[in-house]
Every structure is written in structure tokens, then in C-alpha cells.
Length: 361
Image (tube, rainbow, N blue to C red; front, side, top):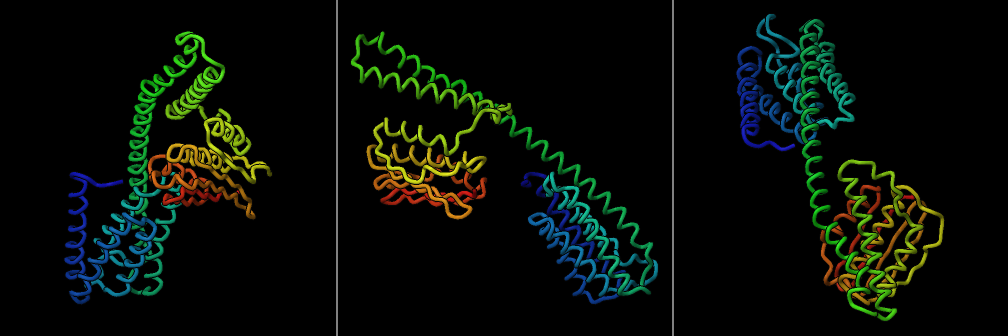
């Protein structure tokens, strides 16, 4: 979540107001030196900023600051609120509102309950340390206000996440339309032209006819993959379709060899790797071979799979494909896949093109 326009100015105004009101309140209504009021006011502003970047740390820091403030200051009269000064309540509520909107939706209720408990603990500890200074009923306003603040923050955060989700859905639908109208159309043209080459060009020898047939088959396979991506982008049940895994690397390697790539393979035989790691392993090898074919066609490719304890290590090397390879969409997507599966990826694009991925078994 980023702030822009009037929200940025509203946030800045809130910080200035918390600082100014805190200085005035602590200096006029509580016994303590002016530097202490300035220090507490500045620290309150810092906890609000911290809650934006690290919600949990911000709530803990703000509650700790409230406790320290209660132990250091003394009201000038019994009518002044303690252990929560009015501006202390204000600053803590701002922290809770900021933190509450930043909580992840799945963990929101648990984190909100924890933030509420940490907030109340500051007042409880202060009363235990200075029992003659206040009364337990003095904690009720902060308990009610903080609960209300966290509820409002949770609703605001849910609304923001719903809006982002809607925007993402609209963007996915737009990408799906572009893929269908442009890429799928051209792939269909490739299929038609490859299938009709025999009739359009007259008699072709067997090798050329087989090449056209292979082109048509590859284009059909690409179309099927495209349809799967379109279903995924349109939030349909694309996950029901079978996903490739290590068992499908044989046909992938064979297709690359048919395209003229000399590939040596080791370690392909072994226990099956299912689930996310299996799919990720297939996609890593697929993208690595594609990069090698693109940047060093005809150069040898070495594919090696090893199992080290609970890890599957995939190594794909090409001695001449590193100079042209760049960290483009393919390599970035490969890295994201591996990290999402809990693994690590190292890519070398110097004189040698090397991909090494470690995936948990």
C-alpha cells in the first residue's frame, strides 16, 4: 500500500498534530521537564512511522513508550487521566489504525487480538508499578477505544485488499483477452499453414513433410498451454488440468534433441518428485533449455539432476549460451517459481550459461 495525493498530506498532518498536541499536553498537564515532553512526542511520531513499515514492531514500541511515559510523568492534578494521557491514547490509536490496515487479511484477527493485549498490558504494568497513582477503571476507556480502533482498521484493510483484488482480476482479464486475440490467433495461423504446406507447396520429401508436421504439433501444444494459461488468468479451474513433472522431462529432452540440440542427461532416473517441486523442476529445465537453444543453437547442453538429502539439485549448463542471455522475463519467472517452492536459484550468464536450482523434496 502506498500513499499518494491527499493521503500523503493527511498522513503528514497527523504526524504534526500528534507531535504538537503531545508536547502541549505533557508540558501543561503533567510534571516533567520540557525536554521530556519533546522526547516523548518525537518518539510517538517514530512509532507511528514504524507501524507503517513493521506493524508488529510499531505496536510493541508504542506500547512500551506508553509504559515508560506513565512511569516518568505525574499528573498535576487528580483530574488528569493516567496512565493514558489523552494524547497518549491518540498516538496509540493512530498506531493501531496504521498497523491494523497493514495486517495481512489471513492473520488479521490474531494480530489484532495481540495488538489489543499488548496495548492493555502497558496500562496494567504501569498501575502495578504505581498503584497509588491511578485506578483500574482508568484502563476502561483505552480498552474500549483500542478495540474500536482495531475493528475500524480491520474493515479499512479488508476494503483496500478487496479493491486491489478487483484491480488484479481486471488486469488478468485484460491480459487474457490480449493473449487470446493476438498470440493464440497467430499460433492458430501457424498450425493451419504447417498442416496445409503439403497441399499448397505440392509434393514434399518425407523429411520436409515431417518437419512441417512437427511444427504443427508444437504449435498445437503451445495452443493448449495457452488455453490453460487463459483459464488460469480468468480464474477458472485450470488447476484441475494435469501439471508436468519430472516424469515428463523425457519427452521435453527428446523434443529439444529433435530441434537439433545435443543434450546429455544424468540423474533423470530416480524416485518421483510430485507436487510443487516437481512442477517447478520441469519449468526450470524447460526455461533453461529454451534459453540455451535461443542464445547458442546447436551448442551442447548438459542436464544433471542430483538428490542431496532432502533437496533436488538441478543443473543445466551450456558452454556458449551465456553471452546473449539476459535476466529477462523468463529468468525472472524461473526465479519466482523456485522461491515460491521454497528453493534457491543461481544463474550464470557469462561465457557459460548455467542454471542451478535447489528444490525441497
